[in-house]
Length: 422
Image 1 (tube, rainbow, N blue to C red):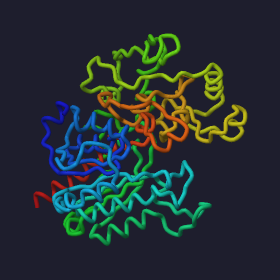
Image 2 (image 1 turned 120 degrees about the vertical axis):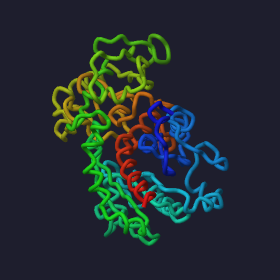
Image 3 (image 1 turned 90 degrees about the vertical axis):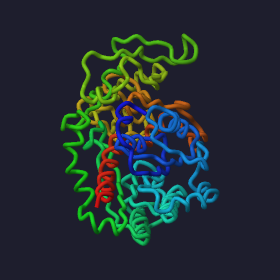
């Protein structure tokens, strides 16, 4: 646990479902929550989670003895540990999580029949068994839109309404809103659908809309983190990670053909954002600095894209034809603006200065993961393995930005504390 967290009393227990590598849990821990356990089925993502949040200095989990500290799917948890889960009824303050969203994503192939969509129902089953005071559900914008344009199936209502009605039937008042991560210090215009549930008997006593409270707290939250009120930019986040005027050293593989990384040196001048990301690191370099090995023709194509593009705007059809690519999302970072939403595909986004994709650490910075958070596992994967593996780029691309998680955690923590002192 970090020095800051060791002096903060952790109160309020939570469970993180579909935790991924731990972005939401990291934020909740920084907001003063006590973790009980987390559920993540991918071994790579869970290894990162365990390394940082269970075994590491950011640990804030009182993990139950009956649950192994290993990758696990929610269906298996419900089947194998139902009695243990029932014993937690009324003893957990918050269930948080973001059910896998690929079937809802506006950026992918929206598929109403994608089996991952149904994982929201497993979330609801957990809520029904444990009956926490509060709920936090995060998902992509498409979670709140219909599938009426899908070739697979037509739906008259968004899936969020189905989930909302089921949660209301379990006794929760449900609030929902789109929230942009850049409003809370994240250098990325990542808009997400957020749903907050409050036990109806508690909601009747609170008398306020949690999202109004969230947006009203923005200024104080940014000041608390030492950040200016303006949006953080890509340059704020990753200027110290460029290869310009830096020595490249071996990362892995052979000295000649292997991967390289920058020989990281802490800059004398740091942006407010970089100071926050580097907190507690002193001169230590972050992990996941490996640079991609681009072929000469790939570098030339990236240079052409940087020359003809409008930074921050995806290439249009005409420009894609000129470059010779069919990728619809390819974008060059705008140096002086927040990044567009990160995806799990590293070649969707190019550096603002250098003809290359971003490193995992650069993506982590844009997501607001501090440098003390170490990402583990393969860097990338390919072929059929893409459906079953969660390498480093995917872990970071899928994550909830920790700063957004912290802002939401502080909001619900305030609601819980008010309830405890009534």
